[in-house]
Image (cartoon, rainbow, N blue to C red; front, side, top):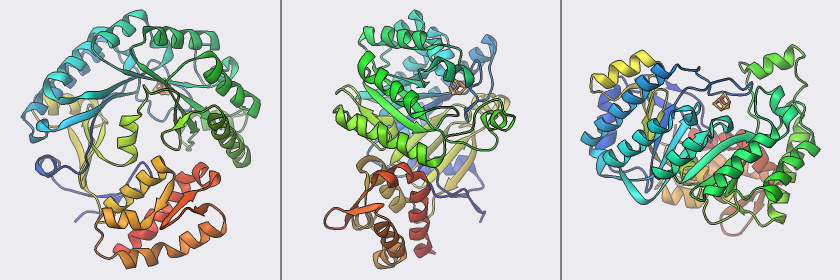
Length: 428
Ligand code: SF4
């Protein structure tokens, strides 16, 4: 047996590495579904230029390389037809990156057509195209509309021109707003954007102004409000260390920004679909993210894509040559396959509760996960729950459930893993 890798978190989970990735894929594909909903994730790794805070940057690509990559993706999607999974309904498709909007409109059309022919997309399948704003051309909008893409997700991060430029973004506030308005005018997509708080040099005034623009100048369907995630290898951190950028707002200010965002959304009647995500009209469902947040089944396509099927976790090969070699040899291009630990299902249910309902209900998760030793788990998490109640991070809300306080919601990426690890200790 090989070692487990990684930490239990809202987005990640450790799994036990399996020696034969393809056998694991075959076994997972033939196993009963791990969840009601199924997503497909298509990774387009390239992006024209690098934002200083981007953790997903792989590099740019020539037209020829992109053509080669899209052809290989089409082949990988075609191979899926032979999989036992191809009978399953797919509820959400997500083109993520990188920047999928950097593909040619004709390439996007080909990919969506190929997905429709090889996968059983549900009648109400959410099909999201992620893009950088500067790639939103009229041709791209027409192509996305014609092939049935029904959701466009844009990483605005901030509207403030000076802040955007300091982070390596070329387009200014006027260009961003006008690209969004062009998309909205087509009336074919749920247009959703990301805003970031906790950026270097960002003040509360700038943050509130970003939210004001969303509410007063745009009629988008959904908004994600993220805290900037930082790690040492980001170019952003080097720029701060070299004195080229101001330091990051401290944790108190970041919490105040979170709380201000939450309060303004509530005052303006936005419907909260998850901790980070708000919808402004009935067009936005946030389906793909919901599937991810609940650690439900997801088929990966493309190099570097990650996926899950029931109790298995997968990661595809990280480089172009291995990707092309595997796909043209007729194989799923997997670099990693792992088996999730016994506590995975329980933790996945908790992650779904935290993200979507903003509460924890240990008894409900124990029951739904059919945990064989519920008392042991209750005992293992009891001290943590008591501590969180004492800190008012949890607020009793009847029966066995507790609501997460605004602070716990803000800090959930740090707190949730503590809960998952405490529960896991009872399994060992
Ligand atoms: S546009 Fe998106 S993918 Fe490209 S560098 Fe910026 S954050 Fe990363």
